[in-house]
Length: 434
Image (tube, rainbow, N blue to C red; front, side, top):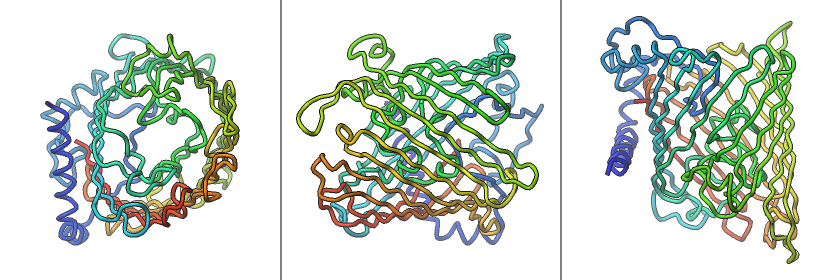
């Protein structure tokens, strides 16, 4: 089978890097690292036009953008024709150093992303159109069983699966200031996200865990969204998606049948966002305010049931120092969210943090950050603790343009809120671009 072979290769690559990093880091630091300005990002930015030079000369291994290079010109030729593809392998080794539920072993997990973007104008003459397909394979140890946390210390943790996670059509309507997506969508790509929170490993720093049934990794779902760029700085977004995940369906590994059939549950969301640019001495930033509703029938903690549940959230990003394209940049982010404490175990969430890009480029330290995320448990749900709070620190090293190494440390206070000991969790993640 192909996917087990890919998993074994990914795990082997990860173990190799972890095993030799003590040698590689000093050696590469002596030689100097190529400058990189940002974290490897698994989100696709609609409307971004990659450059495709007429020819790409063969580059030394540590200078090429992808491990396999230009594939004898195939990347350049396909890109010029309107086909862009990328394969990323993210592998982790985690260890509960103290506390939690299990400190006896190292936990391994990996995620393979294979993404292809088709430019509809170049391929079919459809202006403003784009088709994206993302296939994923995830395998490894369940980190929650070792820690017992509610927020998820690793954002690639999931049950083993192979699936088409994204399959959507993007269409711009330039004259009207609109664009739309239709298909299988990861809703966190356009809703409830923070740019400066994305590099952290804890799942709650990517989106608030109070969003019940939120269709994101590992269970995006079919639906549609419409975005209106009202003014140069204002955006109104709204979407409706399959909400069958709350009824026990793995929407990430399914098609659209549960969107149009039983259980007939939907997840609806809307967000109003304002972004400001680097003008007149001001630093760029963004704030978004959103509301969501899930239509499923939920059990109340008092023994009854309730049709539907809903919540609110606020997200913000702000650049503190440096221009958006500068080698060095200091930025911060904040999150706040609430949910119905009668039906949701997690009723309130607060997160904030700081990232520093270009910390020590001469040593390959491209990005580092510190953040805190705290989730409050519903009083009626029977938890022993009032909240779970996590402090996370990470550093991201660029070993080559196609290889990143990210050591991460998290302290988790009252993991899961049910009496587990406070935990220290160390993780080493490698990300390969093939």
